[in-house]
Image (tube, rainbow, N blue to C red; front, top):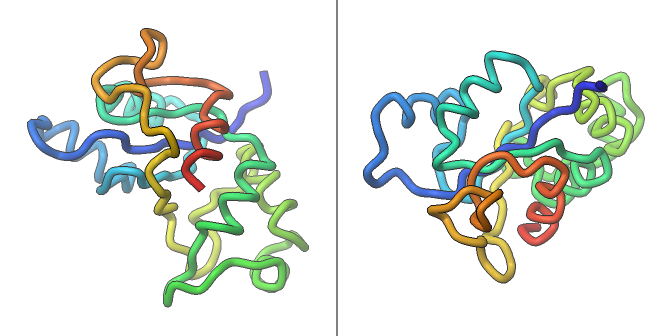
Length: 157
């Protein structure tokens, strides 16, 4: 199986959350609701996702959706947008699409980009979350949702 990067979105706030789960969220850089991070798929990250599964949703992000997310919501320090010129100047890739493809394929980390803010601040999803207290498999918004994360991100851009 080809390794893909995970997009992880915080769905619930910090009220009534255990200290160790809050610490895990801090490690994942998910400090606010509707924040999204892109992390590599490895055992350490899978363990953290499993620990925080009652407060987040995650899945394999497609390279097209990641490129769209970098263009519309990706930010550099100073709140500057990321464009092809910046990517070509600071990475071996010539466009946002090529960079997003390698991030989604787990070849480079998004946070390795110079001066980038590693968190995407997304809008709340259009038509809202499915339900923030149930797992995705039972009709809610929490936990692992596989490729369907792309549809959720689309609603949040």
